[in-house]
Length: 124
Image (cartoon, rainbow, N blue to C red; front, side, top):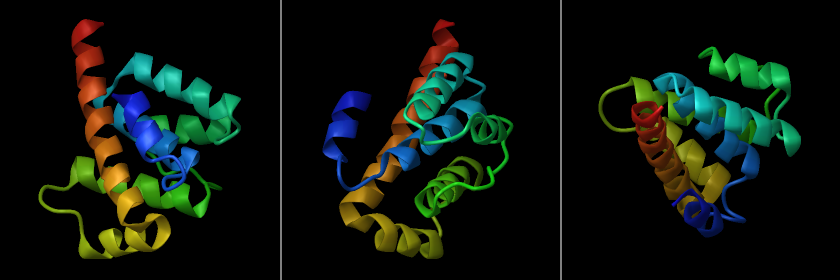
């Protein structure tokens, strides 16, 4: 499912935004495997530094991320920690940064990474 979503959002949702979302979700649910896997991916592709991955894994917004990385962090964090709908301000920022297709893709990444983190926790 993650591969399919990656293909569907190719060109509209930057890779660093995807990896930030993956790390935020994995950290939120304490999914060790997902955290390790996405830290390796982000570092191998030079999307995030080791220090940035550690910050996100510790539940903190990492310094020096790209604009889209920051927005992905804020959006994923909001969806995971605030009950109710995504704020209009974040939705509008996402639309400007990613377009409608990329914004919907970002929300789907949060949902799928949440599901994956929970499933991995059950299996590990």
